[in-house]
Length: 387
Image 1: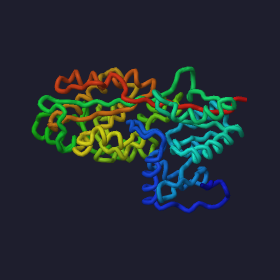
Image 2: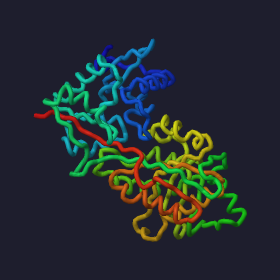
Image 3: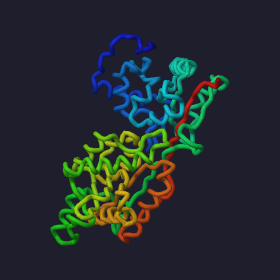
Image 4: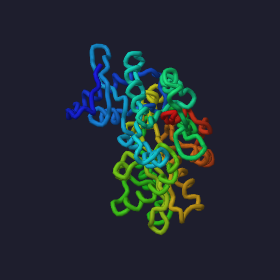
């Protein structure tokens, strides 16, 4: 077991195929193996980036006949999702803030990793940890058992309220297709067919519609609309809400992404997005979804709701409900049930679940259940020196 960076030696990039194999081995050797819809720890891409980043401290770990590198200290700035602007506002602009990934269930390895992490905190650093809200002990107890007198653990985030993330999941059933997942055409193709058959009216200037890609001359305006809404949502939360600009703009031109919009005088005022590809959602644990909803995934009936944004000047016009109504109407004509899932923080949990549930129930052609409470929750903690 050797420490492998911050030594001045230039890292050699690990072949991505080997890194993917090593990531799979890493996930298998973690202490907490019960799958959850929310991924605790590193996504596959996070792991690959960490292994190839000389700023990340890693330890070698023998897994069967293989030796893999496991990150044990990662600058929070190397993980996009962490709101490092907020964290430095709380703990100081010059404070080192690192993320502590989950560790294997190996006493020798864990002790060595904890020594490095506690040395980091002793020098004034702040350690960030994520954990299941209903059972944070597997992440926090190893530290508490050894170092409870030297370090303190506190909730991470601004203000007095606890900051967390909820994951909601529900099966959406249509008459005659309850809990039956069938192969179906894409939402956009079904929508286009309904248009040509005259069952849905086109709305090129005013009203709701589905589109396969956002036109280039509208992308910047849509990004601004999205970023302003999600930046406010996550300004006091340790986790950034929403995508970065480059990833979001790729989503807007990806035909596989369901895009329901409302236009007013030709201008897009409201955008509703659903992903159908788990690989585009690094915050979700694919093992959980394949275990619970494999048939829905295989038939492209897993819908990952990214949210709805509306121009502030146009709010109060039921645009959000109208775009969801259109998605549900098109979903009805796909002749299959669907699974819908989405994430909320402690702010959006007061709006989004009720918006989605009421929109589905009120359309009169679909039913859902269990969307009123989360399936899982993640909490976030900071560990720092007690003095």
